[in-house]
Length: 226
Image 1 (cartoon, rainbow, N blue to C red):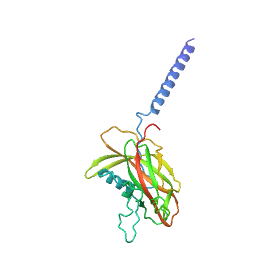
Image 2: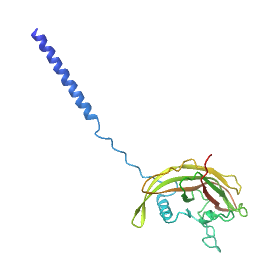
Image 3: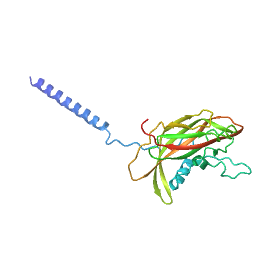
Image 4: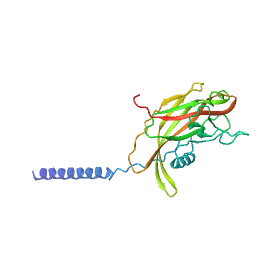
């Protein structure tokens, strides 16, 4: 009888030890605290990071004028004749023409989108009079970025977040195309200064007499109720 009781006690002790060892092992497997993943640095699409940051530094000082990847300069005409500021002068007969070799694929214009912007208006080509002379965009992309600016000495430290892309497809006509942005520009509350930056990129073109692609006008709009 005593031997049976001893055997029972030994089994109970063994079970308690095994359960304790399993509990200790399970405790070791649990992490102390969940570490927040490090935010990856945003690499801009198409436009180089340096070009993008240089443009944003300009926008931080004056956000009224766009910045272009290149501009056509012809003999006998000043460098400002096809300048990118022609896109925002409200004159549909003046225009910006890119100056890269070839039809202008991946050439771009970047500009500030006011907070709340819902639509972008674009008039393709070189105005009505020279419309057939220059290439006209057939398809363009608008990539939108949110940029937080923090003053650092004479410049700004930038924190960039990609918001999304809207595709523009044009008829071969010098008429306005209004397109609703595929992504909403969220309001951000905080101490940092916020800019929304659009990069409009040439993808496909209609061929003209000259191998330079032209845009006449761009304009941002805030339209509610659609």
